[in-house]
Amino acid sequence: MNIKQQQSHQKILLASLFIVTNGYASYANADTIAPSTLNNSLNYTSTNTLLLEQYKDNFVLPFYYTQSPNHKEYQSIIPEDGKLSKYNVNFQISLKYRLFSGVLTDNDQLYFAYTQRSNWQAYASSAFFRDTEYEPSVFWTFPTQTTYTNGFQYAGSTFGLVHQSNGRGGEQERSWNRAFVDMTFKKDALTFSIKPWVRLNFGAKDYNKDINNYLGYGRVSMNWNINSKSMLTFTVRNALESGFSRGYEKVTLNFPIYKRLRGYLIFESGYGISISDYNHYDNAGGIGFSF
Image 1 (cartoon, helix red, strand yellow):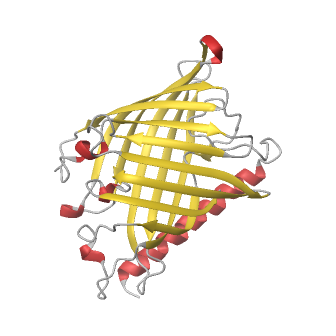
Image 2 (cartoon, rainbow, N blue to C red):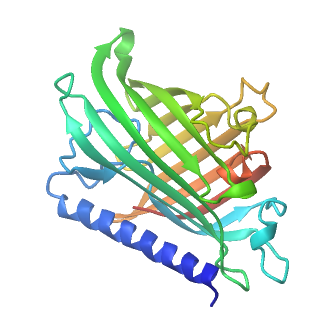
Image 3 (cartoon, helix red, strand yellow):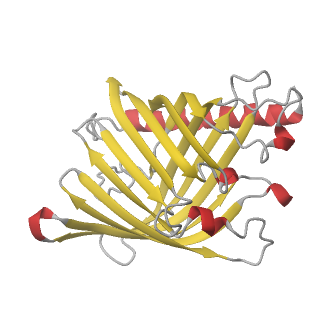
């Protein structure tokens, strides 16, 4: 096993540790959280008292299919057989830690969050990590209970900074920094979010100057609690800005299987399924489990 393979296996061991730790925290707090409670990253009314919480979706997809793998981008890490499998194991770990509460208002909260998503070529002759995306962020949430007509509510605002990177250096580096504001609305079982952002330049060499052309200047997301146990989400990015030529769409379904075991289904299409593929168009889908 070479050094790269050792590093890859170390990454998945760390990822597994994160998942197990997060699952244990949820289990330990089961007396105060209803079993049917779903994670909703747009939710401002969480009653979770833990400092360390789930942020975005945590999932493992034993079956994840990418229709058109980006051979050019991953040429340097493709094994000697020259193959880049369309079939992968895809997983994401996402946690947030509450740093402060009640700084400016009675219910504002300052968080640090970390999200990591990996594409593992587990079914290839040489099982290597095709791509890993790292996303640390810090953000400040301001919940509100402003109600308009017909039960339509403004749920709150979030202001934050986020770094997104593929963890590589030199000409293979794909990264950017952004400042964002997330404005969230709610009506009954629907949660709707508009999240514009601005790219920040800290003076480092820019290896992907055209990234805004593909990843856009914001995203729109909608979460629908189908019932108390299932959630459907829909996300769109860079549709209007690009004239519907370089957009990205994602649909996910989170549903119960047995007790605390949940199923997870995802379909993605467009540019930037991962930051390494920000200027590459692909279609992908997978099925597995969420935690």
